[in-house]
Length: 190
Image (cartoon, rainbow, N blue to C red; front, side, top):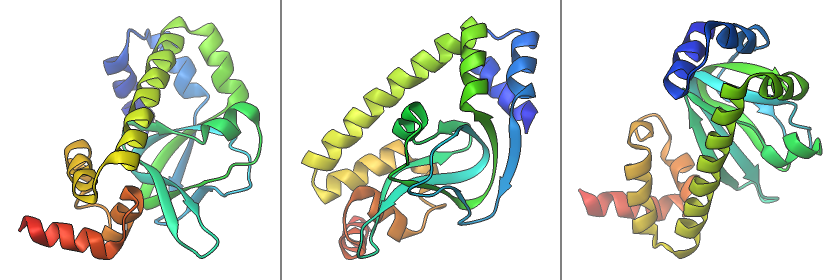
């Protein structure tokens, strides 16, 4: 798992071998089975998570049992529940594996120390955070203003590699539309 992280980081910035060793030495490897949770609603998010293999989802549940998926995190991406992590308060969402997954975890104190001590990691995390803000703004705008057809087309354009990996009900939960509406849209495209 560590080799995959190091390859990924080398593509993202100019990390020395020592930087890569320091980052990877503080990572904890974890394998997740399908539907296994890394974070439950009400728990404090204590880790930065890098997905080496597999696919995670971040989602909330309504009282009537409906799932609202905020994001998918495939391999070579990072995830966490930012508000809970930053403020060390209970999370309002869950993070679980959609499929068997392998992840690397860093505790908040360890990752913050790495950011302070490694300028390339600090630059990378700042760039990554900015990209997440832009993506979140775009997702919010699409969610609020796009038609169901436009939402699905945007999903296809943004995540073509996930179409065959996700059950339709999860795609519908991500798009904020019913499974029936998603089926109608897909059949109209045939």
